[in-house]
Image (cartoon, rainbow, N blue to C red; front, top):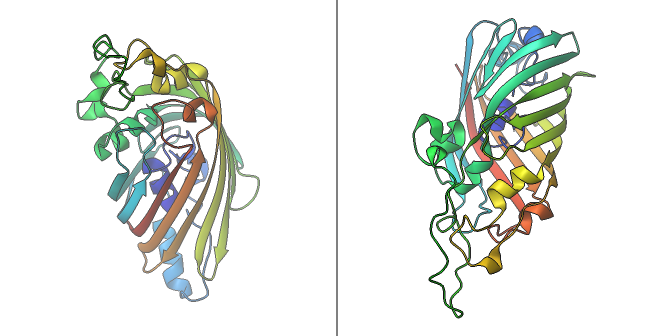
Length: 320
């Protein structure tokens, strides 16, 4: 299902993401629930049934989908450019208890027809705002070397500044931030057909910032004659330690003291809309858009240039 593809690559800042990112199917139900609701009057019943079958997540086998097109996420850090992407892979595997979903490794500790409780570990992608590498954005630089192995040491002193010369903080003159790895617990609840409610709490286990975050999400699928839509609302809490590590400025950074800033805890609401229209048995048009409000604790940082971040994608998706 495209929401899974998009969650993994675009909505990653949330545990649900898509969000970005996880599967919206419990392992127990994965083999029987189609990833998209029944649809359209313009597609014949046989083709539609084959299409929905191709989008199921099957137990004990690798599920692969690829979306190709154009997408972009806005830049929020001074000195970085908007992040463009053209190919979004979606790879998952679900066993009876263990699962892997686009970088999230988890274990289901309680399952029923309508809810699941699981523990998980995954990359915290807050650092993705500081890099232009799409490889690092998908998988983390732990797989390709780079900034994830750079300790957070001062990149230089500010003693050379004169009274008339002040350099604005940007990604090139502050200490290098690093990827964090989170572990936590999540609860997924399916109160009605096409409705998903999720809650996750996660803690840094790599000792990068020792902070934590919590995310709440509600999504609703809406089948129409123009395609299948999914509307999602999210609310994420990020602790002051997490925010200060990435967006705070102090003596560790190569900027004048006038720009020093201590990050504060934030609540970050977000809204997203996904659309999918089947073309053939395994091929569909896909589109998605998301906006997230950063919160004052992040937006007030001299490193940050905006108070929202937006992401969009338009292309085609193929299920192997």
